Image 1 (tube, rainbow, N blue to C red):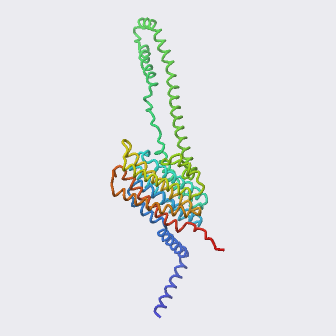
Image 2 (image 1 turned 90 degrees about the vertical axis):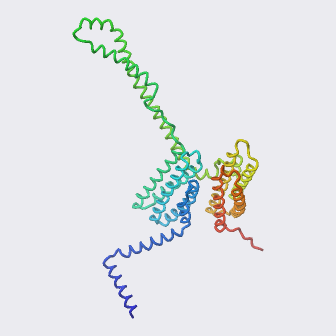
Image 3 (image 1 turned 135 degrees about the horizontal axis):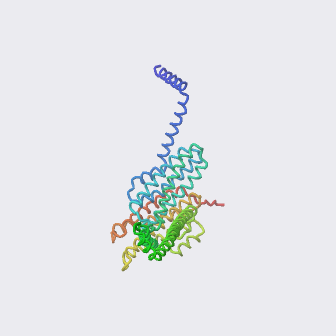
Length: 422
């Protein structure tokens, strides 16, 4: 009886609140929806990557984690946009912007010279440019009240993109404007001619006869100096104008080159990932990748190339070259990481397109486990490890990621066709 009385009082209280405040139900529904959104985001696959990204201290590893995390976040943005949930779009893109800034700052702090980590800078720039393109399309479809905050995020990402382009394509140093050798003789001639003119003008008025005599005697020289100064004075102005125009032309050429490179990277990013000759692939290997007919064939080629580089790395450890030992070790290990990363990216692309890549996924899973055993043995032996330790750590982490991704891909890949017995 007491429980029924309490329930009735509670119902009456809620009814009175709803009558006095009609917005109570809508705000409560919004709070419940927001709680569901947060719980869904906590269960989302990007939360684990976000935690790893936040705690990563190595800038190169952080950049690689950002690439994987950005793929997850952009996929969530597309899903939220299709559901017209632009609150979620704004939250995810703001977090993406913060992650991009953190990754770029960490990379520039440890590797201020982009030439030493050019691949990391390029990959960051490509991912951020792709995010800007997707965000622009989202802004076009978003309601008017969501466009200003999304536009702010787009502006911030554009600034980061420009910063990366400036690091990849730095402007050549300009000479100081006042140190031009062409202006100095003109300035000297002008200064040397001015005292003669001032001496003529400052002749005392009391000695008129002597002044007239001196002036008549020095008139030719004075006339010639005045003529030369008047002739040289206009020359300084065109030379300064021409120097300024040439500087502006150089700056325009540099700006045009930067903009052209940015457009090329944004429009051809996907094609570059598949068909551009990589730094770690030979021309013949690039042709084989480009001419492969199926995704399974490309996956097999990338795994084969990775295996080849790992074997060459072991041979170089046992038979060091005379003058390029460190360069070859780091180059081969970077090549191994590049081939395996490309294989993992291609595997994800095949899953998104719902292709039958089970054979390629099984190959990556099997060979990556063998590669990991070899890498762990190299790490344990510690032969000349100071030369290639950072690249070896990247290779071990990339191989573990490839194993994890292939295990997940086995569950997501299309099953093989079943033949029915007649």
